[in-house]
Length: 217
Image 1 (tube, rainbow, N blue to C red):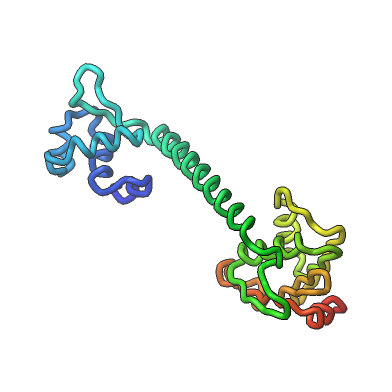
Image 2: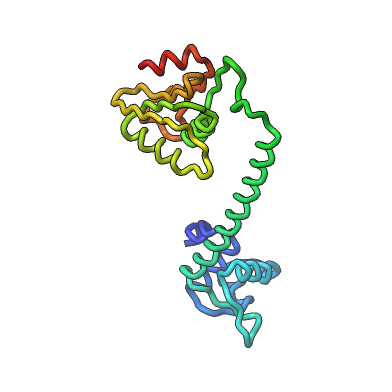
């Protein structure tokens, strides 16, 4: 049970104290210390931590007595806390990304006649979206039916994205998967779709000659 409680983000002593209260009901701090095997010198700090996290409540009449908060209610409290923390972190990351973008060049992230290896499906799709926004004419996407759906959904989910007028989708049953940007650059997928999302790799090549070879396929 202790290992299960730890998954809620509690440490060893916090988990033991919370488990003890769940099983025995309201207890004094001293009784919790004895029953849960927590050093008496630490018990008040542990209970204060659990109280701040929303896992225990303190008796109004006797401040040294504690009771466990219902696990579902405790989960909702910590879930809301995590959501707020995540929202704050995402806002900070967004600000950093916007700052860096303002201070970077508009070349699309790579020099003329260059090639870049991109790893991980999310990173690949993000790069596709970025290159598509830099296109003036068209984007050609060649993939399996499932891959076409994934890429189309990803591109359509990009808020404030300025995409080219023409996005052609070429559905194939073969392992031939690529994306051509304005006949100037091409993204070549190096694995079949059976590999895991994190293991997926693609080669981004900026070369009109290579891009034209694939646009004619």
